[in-house]
Structures are given as structure tokens and as C-alpha cells.
Length: 70
Image (cartoon, rainbow, N blue to C red):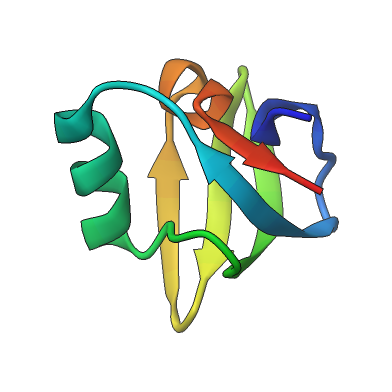
């Protein structure tokens, strides 16, 4: 399922990242890599506040749709 379907408080594991190479590279630089756990801190207007490793990152809905989780 896409990351946008997760609710606040959910901890999920990244299974796949779709999109062009530039998009996947950008997300990898932010810490979104396959196998990494991500916690949804809050959802604001479709945008997500996420806890990845030791950082909190805000992603818009279009980027979050490219991250497939389980």
C-alpha cells in the first residue's frame, strides 16, 4: 500500500520506492530506503510528517504516494 494510506501513529516498513531515478535518489538521501521503518507522526491536509531514523521529515502527498509500505 502507498504510505499515504497509513494513519498517524502507524509504524510501517518501506518495501519499494517507485518513480524516476532522480525521485528515488532524492528520497534515499532523506533516509527513505527499502527495509527502513517509518513512523507517521501526523497527517495535515494530505501531507505527512514522518519519523525516519533520527529525523522528522514532511512529505507532500505526491512523493508519499511513491513509497510503498507494508
